[in-house]
Length: 375
Image (tube, rainbow, N blue to C red; front, side):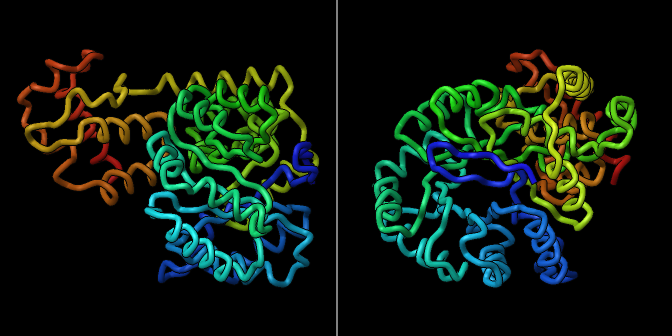
């Protein structure tokens, strides 16, 4: 296993981190504990020492399960990360109550890496006003947490504002070869290098979208390296950045554990030629976008109740990544029927205000047609 040193903290963590949010499930929707424990055990046996969970994962069951599995291991042999659910915090008392609950769930006396979960500008301002940052600093002084950081979902300007607010021990960002200009992106990563703040990477495979790609795109990777999995390219892309200290993978099968261990047990950074291969794949995926909707929402509200940007987001994602299962779930299960494209009444109001000059009515009819094909 490759390890990366966090110079400012004086520790080393495994380049592969085990993300505990996508465990395999039993028929009733609960964590399949036997298979999941087998996966964690294998990862730890092969050198993974960074285990990442959070208060809401698996409907609150991740922390108790992870804590139960880790009890059989010497506490000095792993680093445990969990997160404060900032959206549930309205006072310091709330934060204290939830943190105490987390320690109890995990069966731990302290947490190594503690994060303010899913910060954006507004949520961070609220945490500052409530004194939550100071509360977490107090936990650190008391030895209840070792290192304080945050995970992030907003634009670059918000990231810069948060990152420069204090001397964070680390930060966690969404980063992959398709999101280099999204959220913190390349600019945010470069800022962490400049400030010397270690980076933990989440969504390196974009929620699984970069693990299985359309055949013609997969062929680009296979031509460059017939033996490498598609997912390994995404993992190596982010891990080739020197300030990335661990890459979290939310593994949901034993085979994924094995594949990821293979990637990181004898890790090789991307060569300049391989970087070009990844760039080619990214460009090819982006070329499949059906329209240029930016989700600016000038077209909203729709008189008929259609959520125009969400329809286009699902449609474009399906066109780019070819994941019919994800698109079917996103459109037919996780999307209110009254907001779907087939509710369009072709009034044309949206097209009069669209900055991108999209033929919205025509494209919504195409959404209906394409989604019906995967229904």
